[in-house]
Length: 143
Image 1: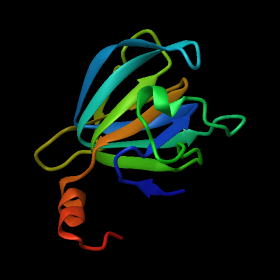
Image 2 (image 1 turned 180 degrees about the horizontal axis):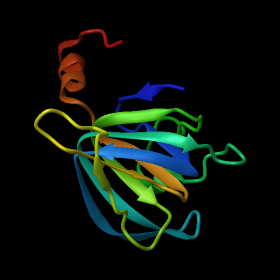
Image 3 (image 1 turned 30 degrees about the horizontal axis):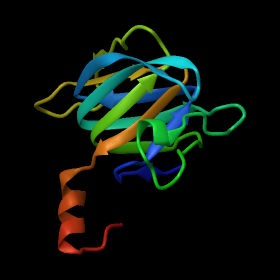
């Protein structure tokens, strides 16, 4: 169980809780490596994806090279989460996700939105938090 913030970090699971301020349904894509259709979404502005239900068996399914060349495999443990300013979510469905508006991800000035997926979900960080980018550029140690 951990939280990951670097570009390219990802999760794969049977069910996930996705929290965001803005979601854009992009398009239906077919991934030849798994021979399934996924709906692609771009989550923006302080996004989080957390694994609620692990894969069974606990083996990564997505061919990461097809979507995004990664240095390591996806995180697969229950409770693992990725957090960043921008996350791309691939959800095994032919229709876009319908978010609920509520307390999750809410601040005093912004309403948060969330969705709980019920099918296979793959989420990957595209844009890390700005303070992480600044720390990497200045050479500071990141916890």
